[in-house]
Image 1: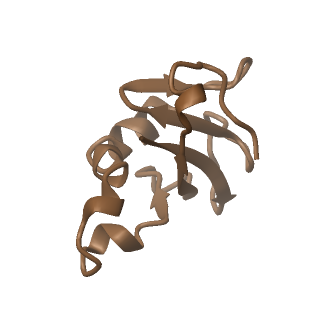
Image 2: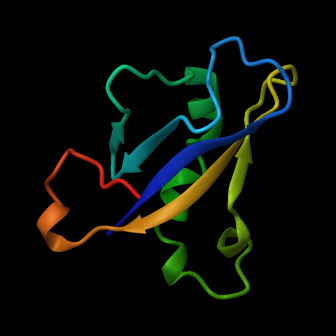
Length: 104
């Protein structure tokens, strides 16, 4: 099963949350894993929610599917202009029940 690593790649405006370039979190099935001491903007998360479950299944989709090409997501706040990078990470069987994310 794949999980998604969501990383703040760029901020072209002003994020008042504030998120910082390099901040990240994981979507692992129905779990949200946020590094200790960090937080996540609820508005950015809610705007990503429709696409996150589909991304975990993109290896099963036809090559022509537009989902195969999704690598970034933008925050809906027109003042923030936060660009998130979405990366699929395959989990091995030994880490399937671990709540500690693998670092790259």
